Amino acid sequence: MIYLRLFWEYFKVGLFSVGGGMATIPFLYELADKTGWYTHAQLADMLAVSESTPGAIGVNMATYVGFTTAGLWGGLIATAGLVAPSIIVILLIARVLQQFRHNRRVEAAFYGLRPASTGLIAAAGVTVFTIALMNRDLYAKTKALSDLFNWKACVLAVFVLVFSNWVKPTKNWHPIAFIGISAVVGAVFRFAGA
Amino acid sequence: MNGYWELFWVFAKIGVMTFGGGAAMLPMLQRELLDKRNWTTEEELMDYYAIGQCTPGVIAVNTATFIGRKRKGDLGGVVATAGIVFPSLVIILILAKIITNISDLAWVQNAFAGIRACVCVQIFNAVIKLAKKSIVDKRTAVIFTAVLLGSVFTDLSPVWFVLTSAVLGILLKQLEVRRA
Image (cartoon, rainbow over all chains, first blue to last red; front, top):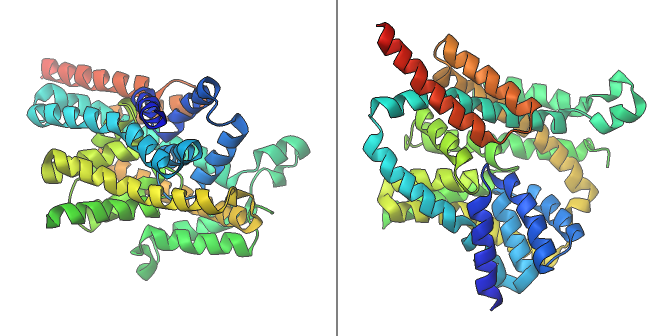
């Protein structure tokens, strides 16, 4: 019964990957070796598509891999399997948290947790920065400082920074508006050089 | 019933507008849940993110479950989660059927290079907002800097940073009480 197996395998991926969507990837490679449902090359393609479509990468990957393995229902069932442990664990934690929210210890723990949480998100931002605005592969080859940054992307980033923070009507725009404009600018000015 | 639909659609909207996963979702969450609806607070959002980092699963899903439950109980948690995965399901299932590899197309690659530059700034803006609420004194500034550097320069799992800083929070507060 492929559907049951899919659900169970994805349930395990969801249960053991701690730290977000990218954390599921090593488990997906292992799953490929174990089951032969898809190849490593296929997985790399699926990852590229999952990154370039809306939504959480982990969920996109589960849907895609499930579909590749067992069609439409495979996609739905793999996703259900992936999110099931999250739902169970979070609903349990939320219940406990509600009871202990105003406990002094819990508040003290969150006093330390909040800057850490901000630090982790900032670190994710640094990774995005190096991918989005820098050209490390090219720099490694040419060693020319002018190749270290993707200058077109840097100029766009400065514009987005200014217009989303300080310019009057645009700073209240929805973030998706900036994403849409940036996509068009990127395509028109060939940001990836492709 | 109404409340559930709204929950579903708000999270479906957040799901469809997010490119690039976890951190990229934060600006959308801030906009849709805080600025527009007052469904949560900046502090709660950080707590959910921190817990999401050290519990199993995708962070976006964990955050959706948390906020959904807060609004409408356990079923609300399930509905919000269904909402956030719904666009992924539809989009990927359609794409998987018609194209095997959109990411090979030149214009898609260029457009995404543009989107990444934009998302980079949006994450920066989101971090600034969070930092104003979470970095409240010198000690929290030290924790922030240590976690940022540790996370960028080592391969340690986020779980360790989250657990250590929680323990540190308790210890620091206890010292404070003892000194007073």
